[in-house]
Image 1 (spheres, one colour):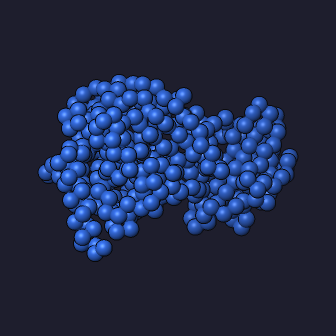
Image 2: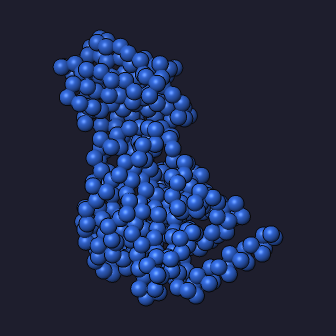
Image 3: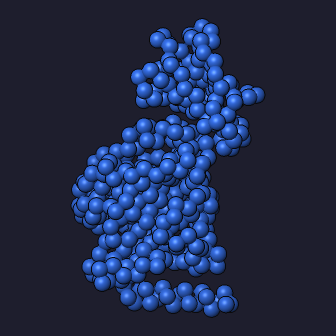
Length: 96
Length: 274
């Protein structure tokens, strides 16, 4: 469950943090940030299928969130947080 | 005013407090198992008014006046009283009324700091004829994103952390500012207690085994004073839960015709380096 978060909390003094949850039946909401409190606004988010094909692409908003309608099949959400600051969450780890 | 004189006045006030029966070593616990969460989840709270080093006796709580969550986004304040339920808490010496609260993940799933504030109903210490009301704060963090942990919450009395209360190594030092009506309280009388036993939140009980043995009674509730700026500094010599209480610092001194001690409590969690 916390695997994605643990992966992105390796030895960076300024590490990315990323989590997603089901906001409503047809909406997944993700939050992105950094351990030093800096904003993730404007950073890219990819929603990918199991072969890493990008299904959706968007940007983190000024409130550090990104929301999307989830694909029907298994997917992953990737936060492109900058140099070596990438974090991924699998759809199986996303719940209410 | 010379510092020695102010300290003497503070000590005199404390002595007077003792003479008039200000009760000590009581701590309002606001307990969750973990305050530094890798990822959010449902939070189980226990609200127990007790003597945490000894695991009791525990005092019966009335329904809290307020139990609030200040969110990590925008500081929105949410009333949590609807989640409170009365339980019978088994402490070392007795069983009495405490409260539990199951806070759904939806309220605490945002990254960052989540501040929980408890304002209990004043408790009458009948043997000493004084009321005690401990405004208590606990701060939970999700994901390691820092937030509003250091911000005062506008309480009548409160301890404003100067270190993250959820991110402390064993052996470290913790600092905080004692406030009454938002202003620092120089030389505030401080008590520190370690939760010296396990807490079985599902069984509403404290464990029967002490973690450490106090060599003498004064080691159970440690005492110190804030400095001339109202800053208190404590060490964290063991992993687990440490409660800091600033005693009788409120401006409201009477409740229902009896003396009232308005105290501020902050809970700090320490982790071993391993």
